[in-house]
Image 1 (cartoon, rainbow, N blue to C red):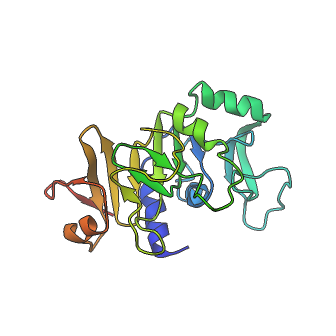
Image 2: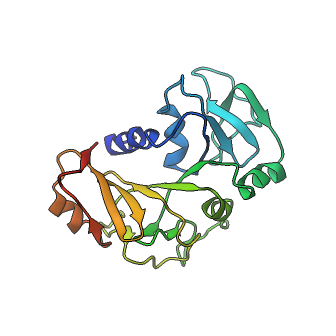
Image 3: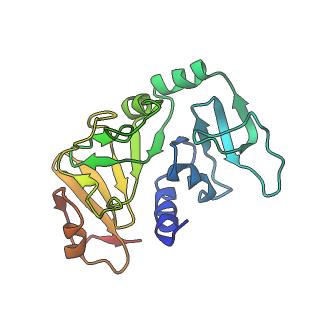
Length: 217
């Protein structure tokens, strides 16, 4: 992983509170449990049907039936439980999951999320992201601030098909941490060494910034 991704994950780990049930989406979010303190009492949920996931021990023999949402082998902590997909999604639909971390193609200042479909490109389907986005109380987006062409991914209004409307609570990129509020995107933290003007230039959405209260990460 790049140093930017490592910094994002370390910052994202600060969003997790002991005692929570946490869901980690496909891609970068699945790496998050490597950044959670081992002594922290949290239960990582996989919609595949596992509660109490943890990273596979170094050199450990994988159980071929134990995988996360991205298809990587995982281990389980003491007290973990395994169940079918119907029960796993019942947990989501009853809002038993406290926080979910997801990637995004686009996210906007209203908290709309687009992370499943780019027109003209193959997609296997919307998967569990739609239900997680609608039913989990806190949704944190982990994504790059701009795409590979340098275009902003933090927009005034999403252009791609939505996963769910007004569902995002907080956005963490390599450049900033942004809270979705009724007034717009409030910047909580900004990357070390990055000027506010450079952040605004890299972002299409309107940003609310109080430079006297900004944290660094």
